[in-house]
Amino acid sequence: MKEIEIQYGQGLMDALLDSGADSVDAFNAVSSLKDHFDARKIQVGQKINLYYLADGNIDRLEMKKDFDNLIIVQGKEKNYSSANVFLPSQVITRHAFGFIDDSLFLAAQRKGLPQIIIANLIRIFSYDVDFQREVRKGDQFEVFYERKLSKDGRSVQEGNILFAKLTLSGKEISLFRHTPSKGGFVDYFHEDGQSSKRALMKTPIEGARLSSFYGNRKHPVLGYNRMHKGLDFSAPTGTPIMAAGDGVVERANWYGSFGNYLRIRHNGTYKTIYAHMSKYGRGIKKGVRVQQGQIVGYVGATGRVTGRHLHYEVYMNGTQVNPLTLKIPSGIKLKGEAFQKFKVIIEKTNQMIMEIKSHILLTREIT
Image 1 (cartoon, rainbow, N blue to C red):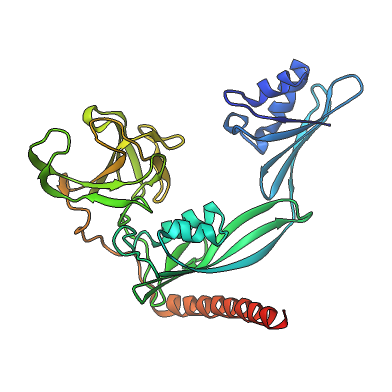
Image 2: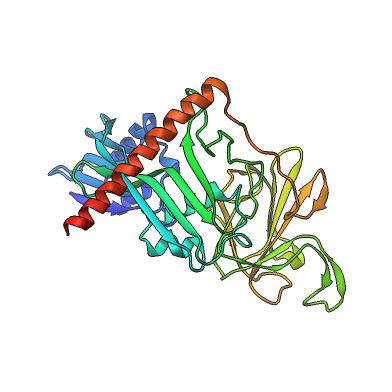
């Protein structure tokens, strides 16, 4: 068996040939994948196990499509076929609680939360919380989430956040994961049934300092007063920037004094702009559709600036507006039978959390 890994600029066919496979074998093996996997979308770092016959021909190829699925290609010369094998796994739940001394990201990181869970935690609260102005030292967070374990226990995948709570200046904000209808979209809801989702997040970045407000100011480079039609968030170079809402990229290129510039059209009403970025997120270019919370770029100091920061603007009906005072319409609110089903989800989730907390307390008493 030989394990290979896809390198930058390398396709699956290239990887097989570079590993010593016969060109006819490689072509037919890759062609047989089409029913289960698009070889053109293979990612850098993808690992593949190759098994060869004594004559040097490919006997078998194995690659994980994702955590739950293994694709197997088997055969010889022109008779290769592929199959998708489901990989059994176990779902467990994890619970974390902590105090915030600086930022939610750092506080969660100190508690050992995986980065993807931290990013999702920030994302689901980004509709309700202004992380630059509302999070203070002494605030608290709580999160209850799933984790998948492979049958052999060697592979782990972080799953969904089932419940999360922020306590900010004594005020609790709780969110529960719920799918309102069969085949519908998953969303996060407050206990009263109100969806947390809005057209735009309050802020597209976490752990940053609001360094310049919307309004008239003295320009730091030009030296004279002029209208500042956005917000500036000071943060270390490389800090992730999220799309404030679902939409389509209208522009993603260098734009004069704005440096690396991005403009997203969210619907017929809103557009958002992100400037001075060090680089763009993976796959971000004109015409690409993005999802709310998706990383679209990273903080930098490109263009006419004095230091690294994100310049953020919001347009409503073609007019620039102050993002801090903009009133964004709320999402759906569950009522009637839909709300009663949601209450059942709340009860089940709270019961699971109570059982975990009871187990932790019992373990401490025994030890």
